[in-house]
Amino acid sequence: MFLGYMAAAESTVFFNRLLEAELWEAAYKIALKELHPKRRAGDVRQDRRTLRRAKTLREEVDAAWRQVLTALDWAAIDLAEVERWLPRMMACGLTSFDAVHAATAAYVAVRPFVTLDYHFSFVPEGELELYVPTNRVRPCRARRA
Image 1 (cartoon, rainbow, N blue to C red):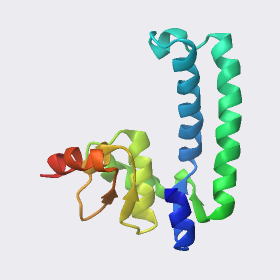
Image 2 (cartoon, rainbow, N blue to C red):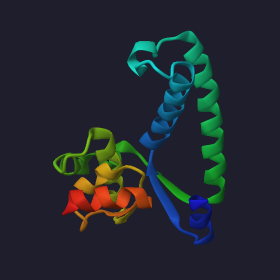
Image 3 (cartoon, helix red, strand yellow):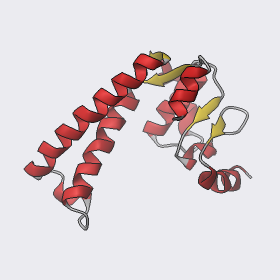
Image 4 (cartoon, rainbow, N blue to C red):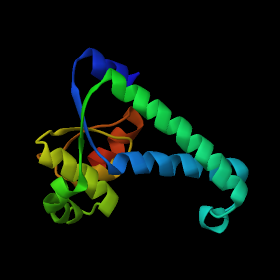
């Protein structure tokens, strides 16, 4: 629904290619939880049943992502384009993967940043303006205070 609003507003969505790999990883983790709800992911990651289910989910996620992109104006940014911003974002306390996403925003000079992850609140508000679900607002404000 949110992406539908973005399309209606004729906004351009910027993302880096790491996002696609993270979408695939999320599909894999869903498969792990489905087949092994009480086990640690690392303990069951190589289960062949999980690998088959994960492939199916990854293909579904990838198809849905490609469908979303047909409705949006978008630009994919390569990691090489943002690497000079990575140390600055990691110095804020972000993990390397999160730093890539924040660096992408810095690279394209876009401050509004839509996320479900409150860890991006480590980046000063002057550099990254967060748009998060209401249940994430309080933790974000607390971290930025």
